[in-house]
Each structure stands twice: as structure tokens, then as C-alpha cells.
Image (cartoon, rainbow, N blue to C red):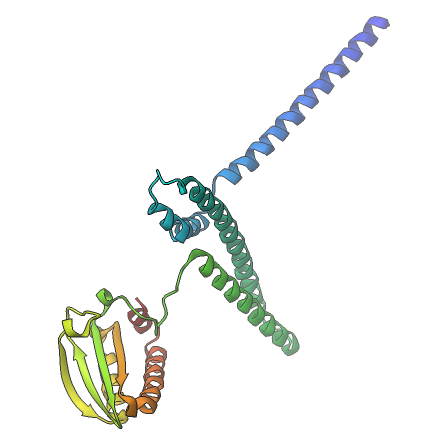
Length: 263
């Protein structure tokens, strides 16, 4: 009887030790999995965002200019490492929030297009979608700031090497001199050839610009407006008209023309 009892006790003891061992193994695997996820990023999109953000850090660029033998080098290096860690965190947080908002917007949009949706609920969903989209735009703006990225936009300044057309509108009093620039383009006015086209009114300048920008081989195009003291008011009016012309052209020609303006 006592022998059987000892055997049963020994079996229970062995079973307990086995369970403890399994528990420790599972815990160890869980810890390793978390550690692995901390040390590596499997999401390629997030990884690319972090790579670009770290490349754009001004602190890293400043450190690269410091001689490693300089007494301040190690201190600056520690600062850079701290900034890198913070940047990784900020990019990751923004990325996760943007992905969540994308999913919420997609689900809201699906509900909006569902059959038999009551009108009051449809209005609520439209407002909810607009709010989600505004939150996403804010997060995207924060992410751009963290990554030191200025996004492409239709009216932004383009690198000279990407230009295919360059117009110069010189406002003199109530008239405008239209000039075209010739390649190779150059920021310095005296190092680039200019060709006088004609002397026109505001309406004539608008007509010429409209005709010029519809030709795709002229895009991307840069339009400079200069003026004398008498032409200040007219130049401001002309600038706004030029912006409206480009916006109108983008709406008509959609994405193809936008890419030409913003590339």
C-alpha cells in the first residue's frame, strides 16, 4: 500500500515538474517572440518609412560633418542616437494610427454604399467619414514633419533639371512682357537665354499661358512674374489668375496633367 502511495506521489511530482517545464518553455518562447518583434520590422511599408526618416535627419547630416577626433563627436553621436530612437517611435505611432484610420474610412464607406441605407444614417456616416479623413490628414502632416518630407504638389517649386518649360511675365505698368526661357535652364537670369514673345494685356497673358500649358512637352513648367513699382497691383492680380488657370487645367486633365505639374 505504502509502495503504491509512494509511486503515485512520485508520478504526481514528475507530472508537476513537467508542467512547470512546459510553462517555462512557453513563457520563454513568448519573450523571444516579443524581443524578435522589437528588434526587427516585418512590415515593409513601415520599414521603408523609418529608413527614409532616418536618412533625412538633420542631426545625422551634421554629425557626418564633424571629425570623429573632435572632442564633441561622442556627445553629438549620443544625441543622434537618441533622436533616431524617438524618430522610430514617432513614425511607428503615426503609421499605426494612419492604417487604423484607413480601415475605419474603408468600413464607413462600405456602409455608405450598402443598399437600403436610411437617409439620417447616411448623413451621419458622411460626417463620420469626413471627420476620419480630417484626422488622417492631420496624422499624415505630422508624419511628414517627423520625416522631413515636403510632398509633391501642383503649384510647388520644381527642381530646374526637371523643367521642360519656363515662362517669364514682366509686368510694366498696365502691360505685360512675355518671355520664354531656353534650355539649359539656369536660376541666374544672365546665364539663360530668353526670347521675347510679345507685349500683351492681362487677358493676352492669360490666353498665352493657357495655350502654353496644354502642350505636354512644355510640362513641368515654371512661371515667374516680375514687376516694377507701378505694376505691383496688376502683378498680384495676375498671379492669382495664373493659379486659377493651373487649377482649372488640373481638373480638366485629371491625374496625367497633375503628375506633369508635380513630378
